[in-house]
Length: 265
Image 1 (tube, rainbow, N blue to C red):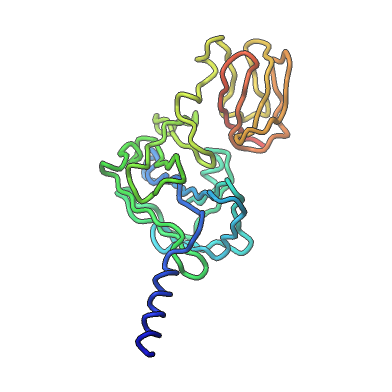
Image 2 (tube, rainbow, N blue to C red; image 1 turned 180 degrees about the horizontal axis):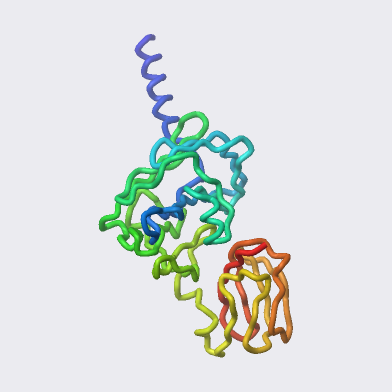
C-alpha cells in the first residue's frame, strides 16, 4: 500500500509539472539595434485558446524577474506585452506594455520560462543568437517571431526573424517586428509611396493627429484585427485624434492595403 501511495504521488507531481494552457510565447526582442542599451526589449504572450485566460500570479523563473498582478488576463486571440522599459516602448511603437520588475534578456540567448500561480510551467523557450536560430534578431533590427502559435515553440525551425516593417529606424537600422499583432509578412505590408497608383501618405508613424495624402482618396481604416473604424470619400486628410495608439490598416478602394502606426493620443 505504501508503494502504491508513493507511485501515485509521483505520477500526480509529474502530471502537473506542465500546466495545460493556451498561453504561448510568440515574439522576443532580445537585442534591439540600440547603442549601449536595450530599452526596446520585449516578450509577447498570446492566448491561442477560445476563452479569456486569467494570468494573475503568473511569474517568470528564467529570462526576467516578474510576477503578474491580480486581475491580469488575456482575451482569446489577444496578446500581452511585457518589456524592460514601458516608456521607451511606448515612445517607439506607440504601444502600452507591462514593464517587468527586473532583469534583461541575454544578447547571446537564454531560456525564458513562465509559470502559473501554482508553479507549473506554462511555457518555456530556450533561444540563442546562433544558427539554426535566426541570427538577424541579434542586433540587426528583427525580433524573433513565432508566426504560427499552434506550432511547437521549442523547435527553433518554427521561429523566424521578423520581416514586417514598423517604419521605425534606430541607429540607422530598420526595426522589424509584429509586436502585439500576428505575422503579416513583408510582402503584404508596403509603404504607400511604393504602390501602383503612386499614392503618398504621411507621416508614418502618425504623430500629429492627421494623415495627409498627395491626392484625394476613397477608402477605409481598419483596426489590426480587421474591424472597420471609419470610411472616407474624396479626402486629402484624415483626422485621427479620436484613435487609440497602435497599428492600423489603411485600405484605399482602388489599391493595396497598408499598415501604419499611430503614436499620438
